[in-house]
Length: 219
Image (cartoon, rainbow, N blue to C red; front, side):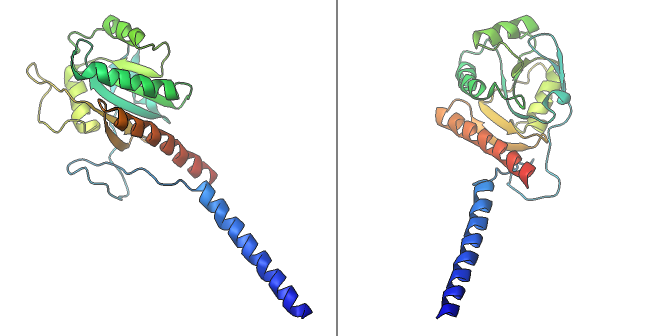
């Protein structure tokens, strides 16, 4: 009888320790991880080396040169707009304000808004637009530069436009989509910037991406 009690006690201890171990693992593990997006078919694949945004060099609303070094070790959201747009761009920028306010205190987060009309969107024009949206720091950058380079990175870097084009005088990109980029400059999500529910999903996915990094640091 005494032996049976000892066996039962040992069994309960083993079950208790096992339960605590698996519960700890479950709590430390993200609920889910975000997919990676690749060129061509944009299929969510598991490959050794994912597509990453190439090196770039543009000018921000403060007249400063911004390169890929600015996003090193940071999660960021990017979009393409122009300041004189009267259709989708105001909606997109208003939605990005929500994202900016949610994460502007995080040093490892950025928003990059690229103009598709650099002929009009000078540094001064972008500065005024940034102030209009309450931006007073460097967590939301409005970028201008060479049109060909802007259009090339929109299409081949961020995969935000599938149409062919050379960035010439008659070429024009007008997309409402946002891209979520991780700390390795890989694309982890696309979102309709004119849809409030989609932007709410983006905000949740940004939190999830930070959870992924926190989990990797612990394990």
